[in-house]
Image 1 (cartoon, rainbow over the protein chains, first blue to last red):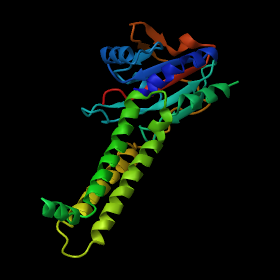
Image 2: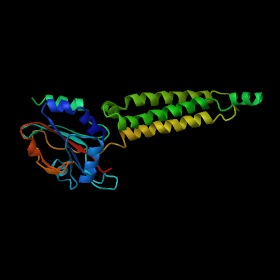
Image 3: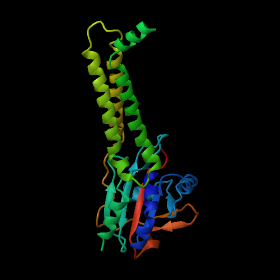
Image 4: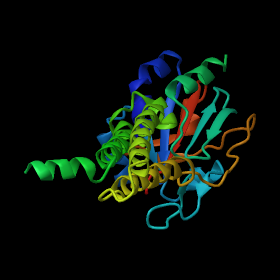
Length: 111
Length: 151
């Protein structure tokens, strides 16, 4: 959750660059909405319980959920205005995530 | 009373130091998880655990000094085993912390989406019930953050 909260704290800097922030979780809609509320997120947190988007991006992590469910790998994907993938970080260690500063630098590098 | 005090001074050499080291190591480990939970503004702590490792290292040094004091105490000193035992517990905790950070949290590598490829569209419900599509953001950059959820 700290990753989503960390992005929320720097949200105005994404706004200033015209960059949208969208979270995607393999939780169901109720869980995702609860998480978005607890973390006070102002950006969309999308529920992908069927892992449709997670699969489309090749990020399914089989049996990694607490109850043996499939979940998403932690990943950050930066897409430009033309809909092209321009920068990605897929974690090999789910504890380590790109910091907002790193992501903002990647957004700046799009231009 | 006086005899007891003399006894305690000469028994369990280094144990107090090793126990203090144990407390410091535990503080270092607990402070890491506290930072992950409550300091979202400091993601570098979550990523590196650097301040927490410094605390843990200080505790381990105390434990090592305690163990050394016990080992170098004269043979036959009462409860000479206590200091090194506490230092051993300490070492086990340090190892467990390292395992958790660098082994237990690693996952199989997947490449994710290819750079330069068109990003797949999706239509998913947001927290307010609104359906969001990637195409909604056409013309501006979008950061997608895949979150593990359910775990």
